[in-house]
Amino acid sequence: MNTVNFYDLGHAPYQPVWDLQTVIQQRLVDEKLRRRKKQKLYKPGNESNDVLLFVEHPHVYTLGKSGDKNHLLKGMAELSNIDAEFIEIDRGGDITYHGPGQIVGYPILDLDRYFTDIHKYLRYLEEVIIRTCSEYDIEAGRIEGLTGVWVGDQKICAMGIRCSRWVTMHGFAFNVNADLSYFDHIVPCGITDKEVTSLEDLLGHRVDESQVKEHLLTHFEEVFDVSITKVNSLPELDDQFSYLKPSEQKAASQ
Image (cartoon, rainbow, N blue to C red):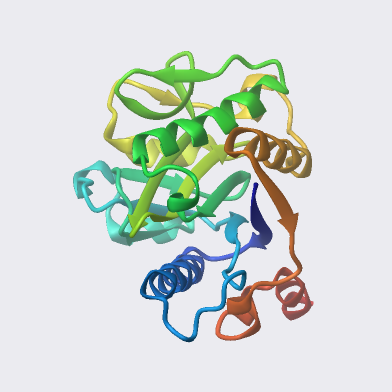
């Protein structure tokens, strides 16, 4: 059974977390290449575990490499009026929104340890969200031909990934207590005839996000057949990304 190191970043801006993912992904890729080349630096049993990050971002719109800028319905100058930014990124998919009240999950997994099938990987991520929704008696599911998780014709979780040498990054954005009005400023995922929803919207009350995270971790373990270990830090957070540690964020704000 594979072990996945879990770290909750709390609230953090999009760009440095994107950079963090990239560095972790590259570490796993480099380790894999050393194993394959059987370099002297490699010692069996010293390879790193996969990583799962949770985070909540400030208001931000991200556009995937295959997306259409016209799906951002506000001009760049107008974004400051809603305290939002716009970033073009390297994942697949079109435009989406991240913000407070949305749990974003970034699994950085070496799929050579599981299966080398991107479509299967996305279905597994969807299954984690579907099972989490069922904890709240919400019947969520899939729509053929569309990535993500839906409740009826409303999307509750968007997904987009990037893979390098079968090591993943980016992941899912699960609307828990998100301000859905921010989706009015885009064509979410480039889909014109569907709406978005959240756990709060469906249940009629705010939802305990810490509880949702525990459900997500439980079902991630089940679906991917892994053991999740909560860690206090990561190698990258002890070096160039130390400012992303939640404890330091809290101290800096006091």
